Length: 144
Image 1 (cartoon, rainbow, N blue to C red):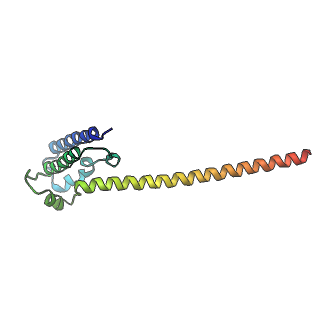
Image 2: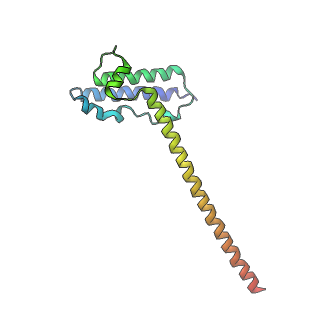
Image 3: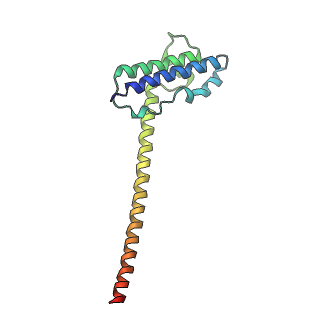
């Protein structure tokens, strides 16, 4: 199944969040607007996108830059690179890359934790079995 519907949902939600922030915080300073970075850019599920069209991905990248321009009051024809540099924000590709790398690191750490837990459980089970066997053997020897 394609992740296009999920990407389209993210586009809609990004525009919605940006419009809400633009209406409520239009008169605020740039320093205050920077505080809403996580509210604007939360692509939590982007690391799971594997099957999507380039068109949908490009629409999301375009939406990202349009929303930043709208929120920070840049003209529509301004340079995205210059705008991101002035604001100290990450580019869309960097945000997606960081999301994927962070997800991979969390999964790796989780996998390591699970392996340690299962090896500990396995060790405890082996010890319990050996104790039970030794008790049974002693009982068997005692009765013989």
